[in-house]
Length: 428
Image (cartoon, rainbow, N blue to C red; front, side, top):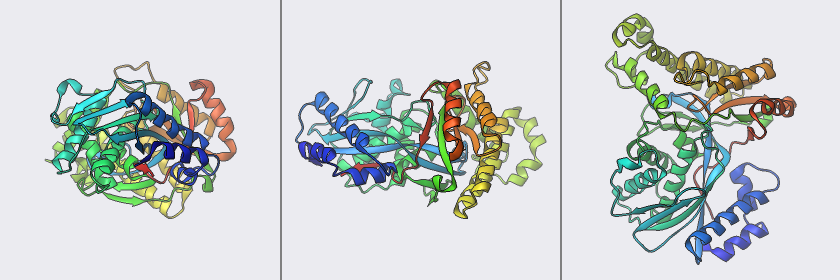
């Protein structure tokens, strides 16, 4: 940690500028990033009082580049950390109490002698904090009380996974304040998944947390979730003449937990026909040879189609990684389009069947199809059902594309992003 006055002066005089340019993949002026960290320090002091020193942390949102709902079946994905993040100012408080104040939310307060599961806190941020603390304590670390103030510009319900960014942020804070930074980024991601599965009561996979924690663009094979294979993949969009756009459809997916939970549940139904828990353990040839029998046994055609998607998109994710590694960007874009088609047709996560009249994501996909005219690529982004669309847009048509998309979705809904090279991070 560093003295508060020294930290504020360093942010103002440009001492952190090179680190900020690196963190946020920004070649130009980074004063807005520095101002944001100065702001979080100011809010910390307003909330908790004057502090002699402070530590600053960041955890990014993520973009899912390849593999859609493949991670929870131990499949393959490509994901990237983006330059939108949750940041925090934090310091130990010398008590047995953890206090986390997130802007515009009620303060979460946890006593370290009460780290059991609270069912009344399912779906609440305090559950994620409590689960993270429990993991570190069970690992034998001497976790003490601390105060933190967080500010986020990761769009909630955007498919950029604000919840995973928050989990990684809390894990990064605890790791650096009380574990000497000994926990690896991969394990920080696993801690976040544990907190979300067990304490938050959401059956998520591991991709979101891994992308946020590890950073950069990564190809991840989750065949062994205790030791996922994580490989950095070069992803020079601008060098290939493209920009990454994440388009907010304007539909919030925050209340669609049941829809998300149904995807792994139904994929496991199909896997169960073969006596397996996950589709990754099923031979694809056996699946396609037994579709008639699976339908007759489980009486759920959507489960069969979602399994079809898994086998297709798992292969596509691996092919996308190979295309990027060999520099074949045209092939990569073709594969993105195929992945998007599979999500729409077979995974069926573009709109909720409980509200068939609300198809904001499908409307944005239709606009992308119309505007790109066969160039670039587009697909549903993240968990789906509502939220966002991802588009790879040629730079020579970016301004026109953004303007025409926002004429439908509203101003400020098309976000042009960068992939940042670091995940959970302490700004020292």
